[in-house]
Length: 423
Ligand code: HAM
Image (tube, rainbow, N blue to C red; front, side, top):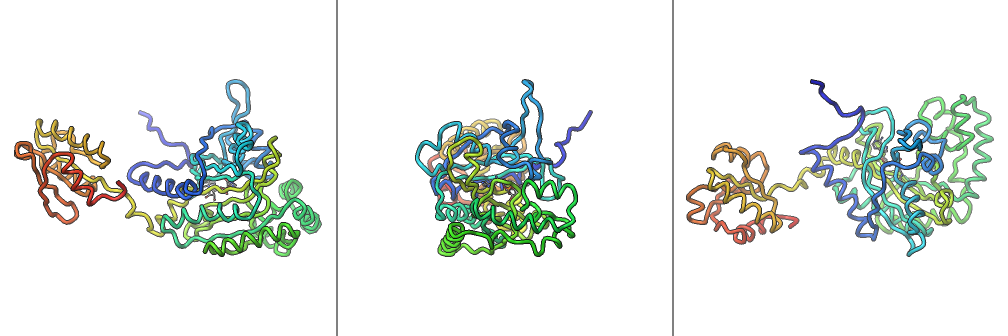
């Protein structure tokens, strides 16, 4: 028989690691919810032109990495490589921008980029993202960065770094562009680099080839061309971040991989992840909405790579103790006990406890082995005697201590509630 394997380069999560994935994803979302962001559930495929227009044709993402295909109706469809363009499309299409501003939304799910797979770089990967649309002041920049930072802190991560810069407004970028193009003219660029430079000369800062990095050493930096408005905005963002206790460094050579960025841009880097160290990034995209046919509203957001954040948590060993154990594992030792136990675990589950039981005819020894493997906090053996007396011993699986209890759901619930977190 053919053995089927997952497609090359996808990340998938199955037990027990999937529990850690879930913890990471939920904790990254949690501060966004507390800051008033609401879920937006978007399609995983969109018209190809949306990404070409929104993300930009000079980017690797659009020029090399999109999963594009023709659907049965002959339309060009692309699996979403990122979330911002689709979120904007939906905000415009559904008139969310006509209501209260800023529109604050979050999303999470799979994204697709046909990259060369390696540790931390996948063809299907997962992001948690947020977008705040329709408010241009620096406070919201700081809020967005705080949300990401707060998510990382809630996962007890401590070794990551935040880098920020400003790509300025249109006027600032235009004056820098002239200087940068003049500088690039003097360099012996190959055909591909010249093509990229024509569409977006900033891309050259992102080139990983040593000779290009060397040649770009003395290139004019955009941060030195910010006009007063852009400088004031960036200074204010830095000031608020400091007030919020968020440390950062300025990286004036940061180039994000997507063309829509303006103003404040940022990346979170985790130094223990090797070459795929970007655990999240984002920034302002003030022209994007009008470019996609909507009103001329500003926007800012981030995308965090859940796969990489999980790897960072594992590298720092920061979340292993957050996995919630089953509260109770019941071991029935005969047919009558099975019936009794099935009803008992159902009642306890409905009261909010995590309970499981030994299936099959495992007997006492096999059942206790299963209880041990389950990682449950308590085990309860149910046999004839327990049913007749309506009482039994709850074994604390970490200390070995036995504690007697009545076997009614309410008595057990009262007992377990003393030990269980997150009820
Ligand atoms: P991005 O920097 O392209 O931004 O992606 C955000 C994060 O997704 C990265 O920092 C990284 O952690 C993760 N990521 C990207 N590609 C891969 C991959 N192939 N494998 C694993 N993880 C990956 C965006 O996507 C923007 N939409 C973020 C944004 C939202 N900007 C404004 N709003």
